[in-house]
Length: 324
Ligand SMILES: NC(=O)C1=CN([C@@H]2O[C@H](COP(=O)(O)OP(=O)(O)OC[C@H]3O[C@@H](n4cnc5c(N)ncnc54)[C@H](O)[C@@H]3O)[C@@H](O)[C@H]2O)C=CC1
Ligand SMILES: O=C(O)C(=O)CO
Image (cartoon, rainbow, N blue to C red; front, side, top):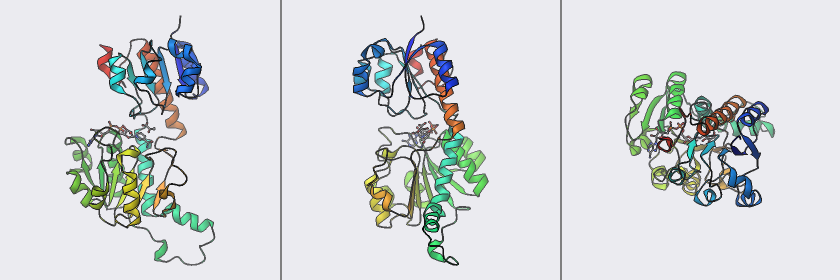
């Protein structure tokens, strides 16, 4: 008999067929307590789950006594209680690498859009404000040859450094828990402590995971250390930045602008003060959202679940100790 799995995301047809070749699939819309209650038998039987963005914690796991693997269609896994999964010997699989280049492109999009005010001035064109030769109130600031600071020199940070160094002749600073030899050798990146990075960067770019350590890593005190001409870009996770403090810093002119793909609450509420600030570019968490990359992530997640439930894991496991 095929193992039972719960799918809580829509998959392209060919990937759904691949999943069904290996498993008995129950498709559900989410993992909310109500969905769990209404489908108690499916959760009681499930050996695997596949989807994204839903919270998987101890309380959820009480309803899944047979679970052996969770496969998330994402690289970030802050919505999973990894310790609780590991205690139960449940493998957590994720999708690194396939999305790295696309997310780095998104960060560069935010760098360019905020510096050149692309969204703001395009809106002004649409409402008929472009009536003659433009003056300084339409001007942006240069990106090329400026200093870009990277918080989180991992896969995405490295791909960002490559773009900034080769594409825009930028000076790269980074802060990390250890020196990153490849970044230093290939992109002449300079390691520095957080305060130095904040003080010297024209663009502070966050590609950090959300952990206990990174929660509100950037708050009022850190924003005050940035140049008043500097721009903050966050494409890691919203809660890495204290959003209230960020709004205040933008309102007070402590920093120049912000480019945000992630927020403390998603979707971003329409009444968020961020949306009334002209110097904020707010994207709806599109870091990896291209047709190609989302397909590749879904394919990777399907393969990850097949590997995990057949005892054949070679890569992409967050807690490989459970496989021993
Ligand atoms: N906006 C979006 O759509 C997307 C956001 N992401 C976010 O980007 C994050 C990073 O992804 P990858 O680069 O693939 O992961 P990665 O694991 O390769 O890189 C993360 C880096 O952050 C470093 N780090 C962790 N805690 C730190 C701390 N306290 N201080 C300094 N450095 C620290 C790690 O050592 C690592 O080098 C994901 O965890 C996810 O939250 C990822 C994909 C898409
Ligand atoms: O993969 C992730 O962690 C995302 O945020 C979406 O791609």
